[in-house]
Length: 543
Image (cartoon, rainbow, N blue to C red; front, side, top):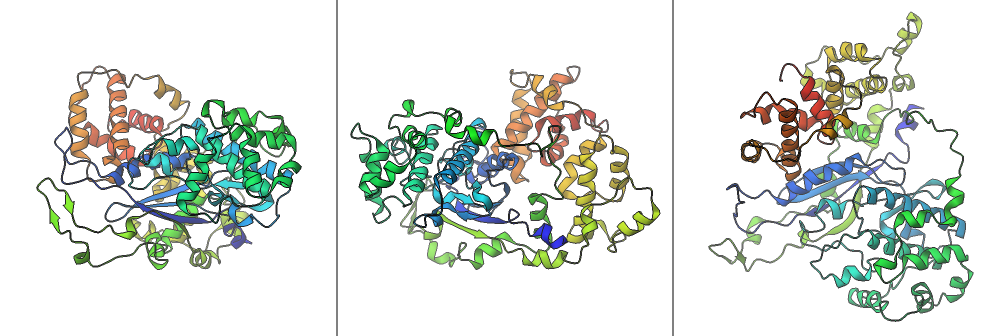
């Protein structure tokens, strides 16, 4: 029974990889320091994506920097690509409407976060049980700063809106309306049950998309006639057909926003689905999360880079073959052939979990539900785990997957009951603190509570002050030792935290070294500035 919890179909993850654009030569920034590698900028920006939680989005789990500007993205990957269902008559119009609704829900969520997908296609839509879907790879355009940090275009040929092509090969158009067009093409393929222009070459596909700009007739109808599917087009319900027509408006200004599409009466049925099983007070409690499963998988010997090498996504060649014929004084390289491995490879490699399943198969079911307030000796003895690593050194316990399993399960349950379980958290923290939960546990130990986010928002962190110059000098110079802190996003967050501290402590001034005291809290709470600041504020040992 316990193995069934681990083998949940949604608890699967995979990895993709690409190369960031390299800086030419040893150029320096205005501060005299070497320019931050683009892969580190991507690493910092991608941290925000880990916060996204939506039933129709795959969860981002990890970002790994490799050699030579390689970046590896680890994300939830569960289900079958929607493209596999085309030509198989799998979906009714009701099913297509449900899929459309969930696509627009997911797009609306990321658009509210100021993120544009730009890679929406049937390959990046994963179909799960009961025809539910999840969007995959929706953060690539954002983490690469609208494509500026990579040398390849972020585009899906037949799904890209005409204005994306008109923007040019080096364009970085980030209008959310381009996702609406892509969704319209996806729905057109589902309704016609046929991939569009599949037999054409790359250049011909681009010309087909641009040819849609000409003419005043319905885009959807023209696509249906061109693929000999006019009868299917006529059989489509009028309300669904109208949604597709609206999405495929040539002019972006005439195209509806995702929020407008969701208000269509076509989706009214899905909005009224009974939600009585869901609590209105708090989110449902999970036995464990996919982030924790990924952490245990790594401790049990899982290696993302090794799996990518096995599947051929990471290939190495002798360094002598990559030597240039000439290097100019300014650092420009001539006569060096482009390494094919640096081109974008869209393959997704799913990580094997059998090793983790075997490692945890003997763990009894009651260990997933530890008793906290039980006063019964009989129940307490029954709940005791036979695995006890408390006498082992801390460095070994932190690398032991089974010990970390028990500690994470217990302490996350205690954190779920915070602040009422604070005394229990303190007692358990004396034994050891799981690295995965260290940031949250420190916040509990420092008695952080209340609406700390709102309090942090009220603090002025933008007005220039006399100490800004010294902060801007110290931060890039002193934190090159850590990829996260040396990223541009890390610099921005650290500066905001220091300015907030100065604002709250007007009787003091900024001094060198204050940024180094703040750095550990930023590393642990990178995606929660409010919690980070409240930790600093309450830690009397530091401030």
